[in-house]
Length: 438
Ligand code: HSE
Image 1: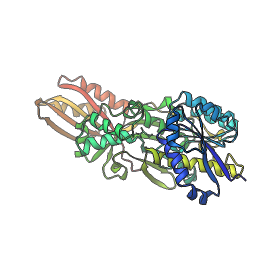
Image 2: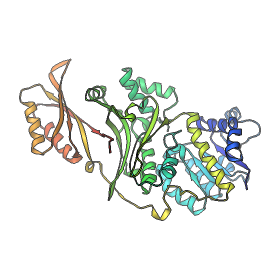
Image 3: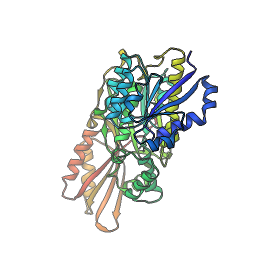
Image 4: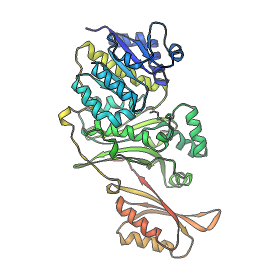
């Protein structure tokens, strides 16, 4: 029976401060739920002045985090410094010192999760990472526990608050990409290096983790296809809207019989779907279970207290495990370790999807006929076609096409043939469409 749990925090930044605040302000509430006194007994932070601003005198401060992970009084180590360098060494060291570890670090889990999970299993300690995906939304818990009776078929998520904020501002308030990004940075959603947000890397870290626990496959960040939103044109947001779609940066993973899709890219989704109306910095995850059907999880995906809320949920889980002397109730990746099996991850050209294409063509008679003929030669149907005159230049038109389901390499061949036409003016824009209805 363990009634007092000592937590060692590494990092007094946004999430570290939030975690300390929740454990302090909600101490009684957490006691009522656990019967345990969970306190931050130590904090590791290089900037000692900052450390003292965050914690009171009862918390011991370590300048060197490697000393904290060896502190015999600490039961749970919480890594909140981010990145994949020193944080990896610290998590490994904590595990080797038989500490249970909580991390909010998606990059660490996506890139080194496979080895860290093995190490944690070897030392029979727990490694918890709820805050690594979709901030305050308890999606790891939902997948591993709430949906345990299901075979998960697919998971689709708005997993990056910064890009969702940018897309919302571009559409609703007509802001340029750069202005919207600057605002997101000022509001504190963006990564230290915002290219991770806008180029889809952050969302890719998160969907990689979700794919692993949804389908029981090893964490494999190298296999994700990643496209961000930095090349997205405001025009396409407007044209998509006219066709009844919104554009969201989605993490998408689907489990087929012999393969898995794992991808991040801007995606058209029907505007009537609930998830299409998740705006601003909010996150949402849609999970299709074979028994429950679709389930949707919505909430703040970034920020101090929402992310810390997930960190504290992990701390409480581990504290309860400690109390019952049980460290392995729920496997770290949701599947028992011998059942985590490799599955082929499809190359992007092998996925099947509907596509939105914007072709930039010279405004000459017969051009539409040539385009439709190319589609016909490939036996591909066009679901919708709209022609837009470009105001500044009536010599050039935008032709917007929506295809039926087609394998991506086939659509690439069609685009190549269209771009070879003498009437072609510019590279075609290709975006994938997800109906999210089954
Ligand atoms: N930069 C991330 C986002 C923070 O914008 O969602 C949360 O992981």
